[in-house]
Length: 442
Image (cartoon, rainbow, N blue to C red; front, side, top):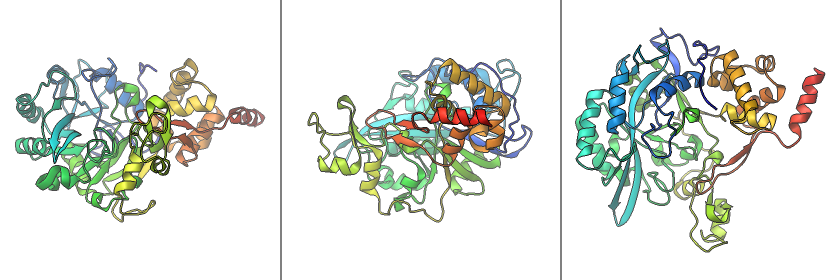
C-alpha cells in the first residue's frame, strides 16, 4: 500500500483533537528507523512519515536514527521548532498543514561482554534538542562508526551508554528496547540479563521505562514484580511507513517534550492513558521454535524436548512467552494496582484482508482502506472509536464485524516463533460468505 493522499485533519473520535489545543489526547510512536537503517523502505523519509502519521492518526512520531550523520543533516535542513522539544516540517517541505510533530529518538545496539557472556542490548535514547543530539553524536562517534547504519553498533556497556547520555543532558530518557526479544532484548533469552539492575547496576534508578516489544504485552510484563517501578511503553519499530503505529502510546498532556517525558516517568494514568498493542502471539518471537525446521513449540512442549529441536537436534530459539515464564514471580492474569491499561489491536489493512479473503497490499484491500480513511479521517479512529452502525453504513458488513471482533479480542492466532510472524485469523473459512448473505438480506 502506498500512502499518497491526504486525509481530513480532524478525526471524528477524541484521540486527535483540534490542532490549536495545547492539551489534548494524542497518539505517539517513539521507535522507528529511517531509510539509512538496514532492511528499511526507501520511503522512510520525513515527507512520507509525515503523511503516514496523518493517515494513521499519530500526532507525535519519532524521526528515529538521529545518530546517522546524513539523516541528522536532513533533519536539521527540513525540520523547524514547534512546541518545546518537538519539531515539524518546514513550510517549504510540508504539504500545506502542520499536523505531525516529530520527537528526537534513536536506537543504539550495544554489543559487549559482561560477567562472562556476550550481551547484545538495544537501547532507545530520547533527546530534547538538536544541540543535545549533536553532543551525543560527537561522543558516540569517538566510540564507533555512526555512518555504517541508522542503528549503530557500539562496543559499549549499556550502563556506560546511559552514563554518557545523561551526562550530556539529564533531560534525555534511556529506554531498553523490546525488552524480551531473544537476541537484542535486555531480558532476552540469548544475550540478555535477568533484571534491569543486573544490566544497569547503579544507573538502574535512571531507567524509568521499558518497551514491551511486539511479542509481549503489558499483562505478560505484569507477572514480574521487579518491573513494577518502570512504565511500559509500546512502539512500532517500523521499517516502512505502513507499519508505523502498529504499537503506540496514548497521552492526555500538553503537547511538548517535557510533558511527554514527565508523563512517562511519573506513570500517571491520568496523563498516560493506555498503550496500543500488537496481539503478542502475532509477534515473531512469541513461541519457541526453529525456523529452518518449521518447528513451533509452546513453553510446555519445549520443556518436553529439553529445549532441543526434535527435527535437527540443535537448540531452540527460546521465545518471549517461555522467558516470561522463567522469570515471573506472579501468576498469569495478575494486574498491579499501579499500571497503565492497554488495548490490543490489529492493523486495519490486515482486518480488511481477512474479512474479504484477499492478501494485504492487493487492489481490493487498498481500495477499502482508503474508503474508510476518507470517511473517518484516520486509522485509529476506525479501529477504536467508530460504532458498528457507522461502519456498516460505509463498508462491507464483514469488515465492520472484523473491526468489532478485534476490539473484543475475538481472534485466532497461530503464534510466531524464531523470526516468523504469527498468523492471525478473525474469521473462519466460509464465514465471510455467510456474513455477505446476511448483509444482502438486510
